[in-house]
Length: 546
Image 1 (cartoon, rainbow, N blue to C red):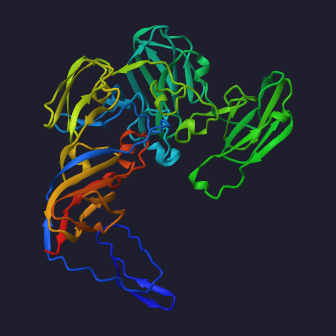
Image 2 (tube, rainbow, N blue to C red):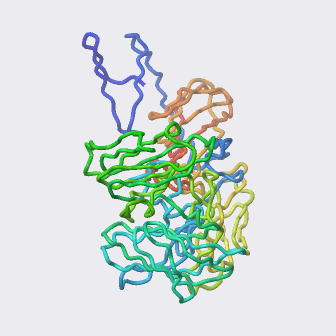
Image 3 (cartoon, one colour):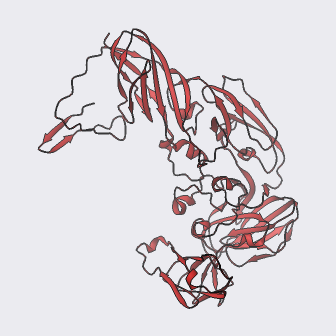
């Protein structure tokens, strides 16, 4: 569509309206010729609000980027009969309190952690990663007592309880204090828990004001609970033994100040010392290949710094470094962001994303919770012909195909209530259906990333015409009687069409983005509300000569 413009020498000044969208695409064809005027189309036909539709899947999970487990349309958000949203896999698994405040439910997902964990914004960014901490207490003053309690179900074979928190930790199991090796952020119980149910009570007391977060899990081997700690002191030293023909050795060092790294007295490198963004309090990270500096037998690793350092790889920083290293419990964002080596994730189902090692499959439940029947409602997508539910217990589906909503009744157990009663999304199989114009989110396609093919048959006399789709969120491809009429990726969504005598089959393929699906399944939240909106909103009008 030509826009008002003026030419001044080699400069073209164009007036671009943004009434129908936030962006515009300008195309210069290299000529000064004015386009031929469009013919007048005095007759306008409104093609209606309800269309025949067919879903067009476009999500390609060849490389398991999305963790999908089946075909069809997935529903990750249900609702209660009162209209409250229910997020699949998220449910109450314990209780927590700050000081003398009230007890509140601790809600997390065994596969995704905290719902849209805010730690991504400051530390992780838009990465597909599940943070290791899933207990969030908010801002807590130094010396304040914070409590968490849960009923933990230990699997056959038992396991050791491993904890992580930026605070001193006291643990009671079944009313008796269980000794902990707690000298930093990480702590591990000195004795294993036998299989079965146990009441776990955790007391946390931070020594400085901070945004207190934590995790609790079961590990088979105490070595699986070891993580690098922030330590300070000058100098800091440890000894590592190297076998003959050892593999390449790497040290990763994070430091808050200038830092010098030495292996057997030889300098491996330096880092830090200049920080133009000191107010952000961001540690500097560097990796060192120290293979050439190592020898068979004992080797001394030495770090010289006036600040705090965290070392991982060939050696792991901790309170055992000499001389008498000071340990800081507080972390920077997600602790795992600064680890070099992978550790078992505290969430037993977090391996869906990267296939990494995970903690033992322990269950967590609110103390005193009882089995109950819970009702959930959800709207089927257009053309739904079948439903698949993955529930952690007996369930009943009440639904007559072609009607809405679907009622799902799940008989839940204490450790799998709320959205945690479902291990994955509700999936629908779909065929041709009927759908009104508007936002897909409101018509059973919340979280759907793909395409919808709209179809309608309209009578018209042969000749040229103009098809105006009105408002569209997504790209639009139009064909009439099988003849392609073009593709539009932004407004105006107007197409020149050629019509035949009699009935004309109009097809409109609208394709959305990955944003809705990623917002539903991803542990990150770098998708904003406006990015989820997709669909053909119309009004769709056909203009003809007569």
